[in-house]
Image (tube, rainbow, N blue to C red; front, side):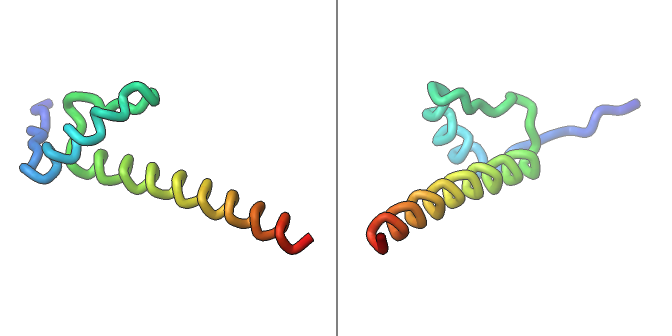
Length: 66
């Protein structure tokens, strides 16, 4: 079977370099990941951060109501 050629655009390359600074948090992108995989990873990352922010704000809101 012929391997599908995976390539990265300039924007994605810059984004990968930016995400490499999070390696000490245990987040690393495999070298041969395609653009779509990286986009899905990014969406999951944003979802996690937003969920954490919502949970924290709800806790603060409840504390101030009581």
